[in-house]
Image 1 (cartoon, rainbow, N blue to C red):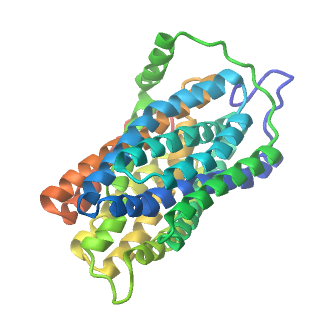
Image 2: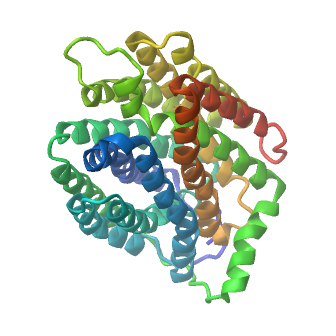
Image 3: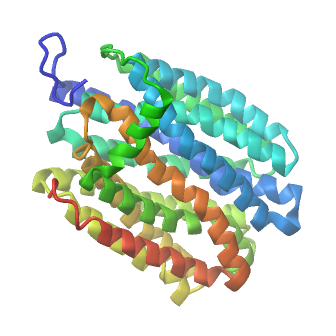
Length: 410
């Protein structure tokens, strides 16, 4: 389906239908990020620590890294299946409902190996949900409204992260229940989206041989603008998750918390602080980038600001420094994700392969999460948490520079 369909039997998206779609996109993405951040930032670290406290840093790196490897290769596959079927909603609903079972399994296991396997299964079903949901914007939203749509998608991150982390922190002593609650949240969101966002079936794609599919996945990276957008996203996300993925342990082992404040409670405070500034910058960045018809400027500046924010805990390794870091980093990351998503939808090589190509882009989200746990645990093991913040800052600043070569978008 083209971004602006020309066949007479496929109506072009209208502003009215887009507006009706935006709250549903927000709901679907909020639930997705609630699960990812609630599990990744709180529940998984707690579960891993309870299994083996002495090796918690290395074990968390192993679990998160193995699951991210799986997700990296599975996301384009899930997107290709969605393209081939000509439908998005069934994949969103099926992935959302299956998440409940996956979270129940994850909460029931008690060895590092089984935790890794269960989280891989959780990533699999969530990738069906995510790949189809991500493709809704290029499928159904006209180019002139991409900034607003991306803002609705982007708002899911701050709101979802707050909901997920606060929910997970509330169940810190009963993490099995926390897993189920987050899984049910995704299932409900999937049901609401598919009931509210009626879709017109696209022309199904004929199955292609595996070799051709792999060549197509790799071929999209030969496109100049898409490749640089991919690199910029990869670098920033790697820097971000290298730090955020270990935030609970940073607060446990590196930051002197106020008396009576537990690390899980501290995470539940920092996340809403970040979420507020992230929400503001997501909306402002998406709307202003539409009005100014400028994407690269916002993406580059927000990535640079993210790099600067990661140096704040280096200069001030205190609870106050962490609060300022969370606020500034939320401001930067929200604007980046909102506007960068709009930018990417404008450099997709082929509209009819939107889900597959957005799945390739999602490798720039999942791929860094492969490296982040391994690299972060190595950095912490060698030099502690201060070098970890510096590492993240350097990568974010490199991500800011990566947007400059993009030619097809201002």
